[in-house]
Amino acid sequence: MVINDIKITRSIIEEYYAFTRDFLDCDVVIVGGGPAGMTAAYYTAQQGLRTVVLESRLSPGGGMWGGGMFFNQIVFQPEAGEILQELGISYTANREGYLVVPSYRAVASLILAADRAGARILNGITAEDIMVRENRVCGVVINWTAAVKLGMHVDPLCIGGKVVIDATGHDAGIVRTYLDKSGGSLPEDEEERIRTSSMWAAKGEEMVVEYTRFITEGLIACGMSVSSLFNTPRMGPIFGGMLFSGRKAAELALDYIRKVKA
Ligand code: 48F
Image (cartoon, rainbow, N blue to C red):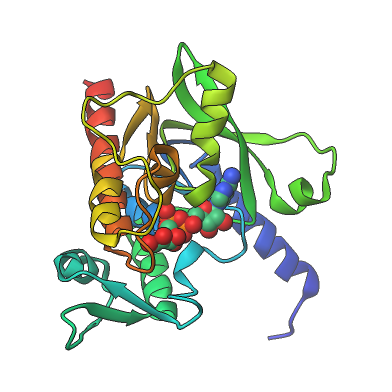
């Protein structure tokens, strides 16, 4: 075969168009391709929901690449074994009683699991705003991360979704945009909160899952964004809570979409 430069270019453009076209108005838009967002994507796509993950960097994976202080091993509590198996992430149970996976394997397996389940992953794209109709979050405004970083005046595009999941990590950028623009506040909880972000892995892991929830109609927060919003204790380099939080966000999205459709 004689390699043809124009055909290569056309292949890229046509495939990208076909790849995104049917997902512009989808069921679930997940902002952030870290462990929480990718796990949520796996579970929503697995249930047949049209799912898009927007990741501002070129590589999804978020804070999972670096393990702990660049030692590239990811530690999970044994309870996460079931999710790891479902996601196809092979691990070693160590003598400390934890499950351990090299970070590159954890990230690569997560991406592959979400992809095989049918999620579309759009990298290099930043969600910079939200869409709201009748007090319901119904999509996000997007632009190339490069354009955002360079401060270029390029009008954005948008992606609609029945549910938007903020999996942006510490930034909690989507929820904070919603709160800024609506003048709203976080849902209050009757329960006493531990108002500290100091490291306490056991409590942090538990609370990040507990506080994974709808912030308003159509908008769920999961993963580290929950921790940042609700100021839960730092969990440090253990990742089971991110997977549990992502799975819970997917379950919430599924229930919500079923109710909207009913
Ligand atoms: O930070 P990140 O990994 O969040 P997570 O999935 O997991 C947290 C853990 O990695 C770790 C931890 C474990 O104990 O504490 O920190 O909750 O992934 C967030 C991803 O979202 C992307 C960002 O590049 C990262 O890959 N992101 C952030 N803001 C945007 C975004 C945005 N506005 N649009 C698109 N992507």
